[in-house]
Amino acid sequence: MGIQSEADVLSKLSLWREASRIVNEEGVRAFWKGNTVTVAHMLPYSVLNFYAYEKYNKFFYSNPILQSYLGNASSSPFVHFVSGGLAGITAASATYPLDLVRTRLAAQGVGAGGRARVYNT
Image (cartoon, rainbow, N blue to C red):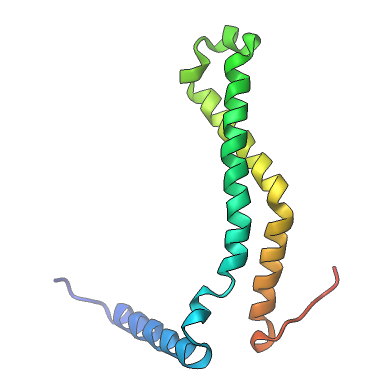
């Protein structure tokens, strides 16, 4: 077992102290606060990402012009890279409103001791 630095010990103690404070003030459920909104965002994002990736791959595989330049496009790292990038852009663009709601809800929980502040932008 190695020697722990003083900073490591102090950070573990403060982490434990903060976790205890959260449990005492808000209960165990406080550790999952906001998780529902995150899942509500990540589920459609992941579904769209996988779906779009497959569709972009199918497009590149069946495109005769790309086939003539790339040869066997199914094994081309370039095709996988471009398909993944386009799928990420598609999923992020489609789920941006959910991400915005998630971010605003998280920001409200941080402001003024947990009291919600709403600013018109």
